[in-house]
Length: 198
Image (cartoon, rainbow, N blue to C red):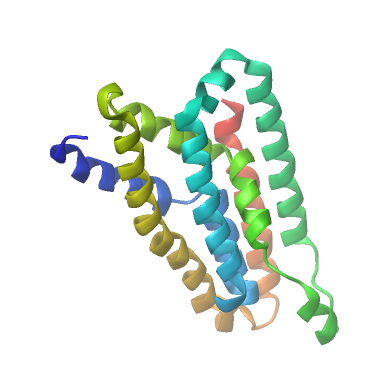
């Protein structure tokens, strides 16, 4: 990778990882509902899952999906179903009993990591970064540089979404604000499926 490509790559990662998408919306909601500490496995699962997906695409998975469109359609369907499931979970009224509320949990490390395999934004982002910022003669070095930048920039960016939810937590505890916030997050999650449809 040419040194002059590093700054555009950083800008690409900042925009793609820092803007709203399924991961960030779920982390915002997790922060508001569960706090930062309980969301750490979710945050780490996203980071590790994206790294694994990046290397899988670099090793040829992206070309395999291009060669077999039915596999790509299956991934879109699974991703869409998972987002619908998450939206329903968010929109469901929360139980009134305190002990039952404590049983509610954010995504686990493995759930968040596996979600990246059906996350349409993750696929679009990682295929685009490989196509744009890699060169055949130094392909795996380029992919390694991309992975490092994605990890060290992505972790604080996605954490900021969760911390934003935590910052809203006190305000959302008043009246039915949290319920309305969760309805909004559910709708936004469903809207995030739009890129899969086009």
